[in-house]
Image (cartoon, rainbow, N blue to C red; front, side, top):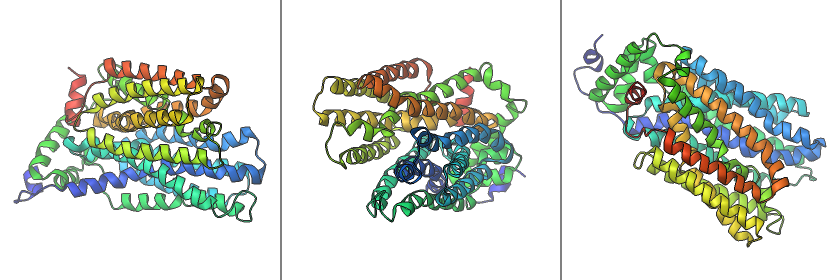
Length: 459
């Protein structure tokens, strides 16, 4: 059936509201990741006391989610390129839903670890594919802003969970009768956003690019038409089908030879330095950093909350600027800002400057990340690759991201114990490397269709 016939006699108008709904629906996967990051940090205080956990077991309970996460992101692309983006996202939401309830009901460390691995599998399946889905649905003009929805909801999840943990903890400390219920509520509430994500995705269509690639031309055109209108859908469907025909003989090994090897190198670089810029050295360990600086039992918690609020505000700034200034200028400004402010943060601790300066520099580090490397990395990883490889390529890149995340979480306390403020000088050096890599390696993709980005690599 021709596209003209598909669209009917009347030219239809697109709906930006519809696109935003799709972006928020998939972006809710970020809320799961953000929720888990903070909920376990609150629950582990209770678990350590109730179960008499060793330091090693505490660390393994927290980091075990990354085992499932690496597996999830590693296989998500391969599965999604076969059965679609939406089904895999649904599986991820269902896995996290079960894991959240399961982790709230266990009574021993081993069961908790198994439940968290399952939760990590769910987050891993959803993390890279959520951006891929949004990227393949969003018009080029607004793709950066809409694709940033994942990062925004991740940060929102972190901020809201800090508030939830504080509220639950206020009902009773680790030695109260409420202690055994407190951590269960902290973890179990995670089932709510998982259920919302599942329902939202169940009511959403498959990615139009995947539909066209898999031969469902009428359905794919219908989704494109609802997103951008009849005229835009005709043009975009034609470009997508031409791209699909050109890549019909493509295979996974294309990612590791010219011209797509360059795209893969950029994707891996961005994935690694999304974490290697060191923002999680603050996000994960703010209480440890600020406890000796500020007196009072709640002071370090208040520092963490303030830093989380700054990150939330500047994520909005990044979303506003990404399709106006472009991806590359934001990453250059953000990585250079992190370099300067991390250096100053390190000096403030080494030279015993007033503690409030250390807090200000930490907030500026997080602000610089939140408008740049935070949202832009996720957007670009899903923009760089052709449709027939996008899911698998994004999944492989995200494996490197999760791996770098594990290293930051694992070794920052060791470095901080040995180097003190010098730890943040180290992260300043890593940020300088990130700046140079973005300057000389990463292309600009603002305003380009996915097919135009693909053609860039073949020039």
